[in-house]
Image 1 (cartoon, rainbow, N blue to C red):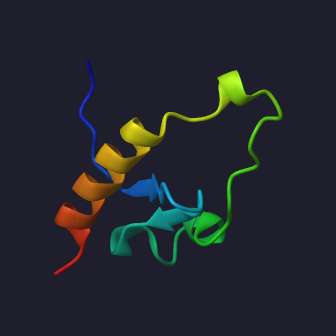
Image 2 (cartoon, rainbow, N blue to C red):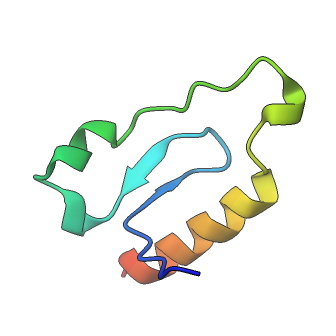
Length: 64
């Protein structure tokens, strides 16, 4: 299993992409604030629990 750096994440409430301050002024900045396009098939939707867990860890690592 690889190392997770938590440099970007997705807000579980609105599926908005958020980036780490380390990614500002990089090519990843263009994704900040964009929202995921969700699949029509409800079975293929992202897992909200997994998104929430990842997002909470992202916030812990990058917000002071």
